[in-house]
Picture 1 (cartoon, rainbow, N blue to C red):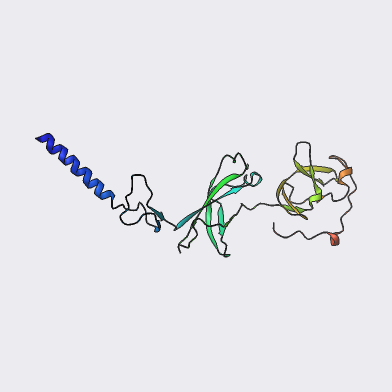
Picture 2 (cartoon, rainbow, N blue to C red):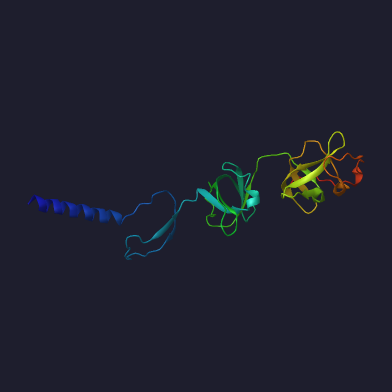
Amino acid sequence: MQSNVSVAAAELAELRQSLAETRPQAPFDGVLDRLYVELGDVVQIGDSYARLVDDRRLKATGWVAQRDVFDLRPGLDTRLRLLDGSSLAGELTHVASRADDASRAFYIEAEFDNPERRRLAGASATLTIALPEREVHALSPALLELDNEGQLRVKHLDSEDRVVSSPVELVAGQASVAYVAGLPDTVRLITLGGGFVAPGDTVIAMPADTDATPDWRETP
């Protein structure tokens, strides 16, 4: 008799659980974005019947070329520019440690608050990442040289007018100007005849015509 009661109690508990599962509750607060079933439809275990969206905080994903990934780290300020010209402020939350096998680009993620719950989830946008400030020099791309190891270098003079070839890092560049890091704060560049001198040579320096020097003070 006791066994029958136990079986009945177990069956009752199972029925109550089944009834409770017909009244599902969302695991988080959000907006019911889409309903896949109609009244009277039978839903099997594992079927999707609705889509719930919590768009108060958004995650933006993208890909960064391998030449640009070295200075990236979680916590950097980011800005998400939308198609209507407006933007959201956020921060970089993830930078992949391995490049994609096909594109050699690195996957990144950034998160943004969306307090107005604008309809942005799944949309396209432009992600801008603010890198740490650093000192750079603006110079003509024609002054860049490539050594046998593939390292960019720039020739300049020391205090005794001897030729020095310093390795530099190309931070940004355009057709008419290159922004490089790695040079001394104050540097005398060799703008003419650099191909005819080698490191260690002593030369007679002639100052350039400053009136003919392009203005490269624009921020990269």
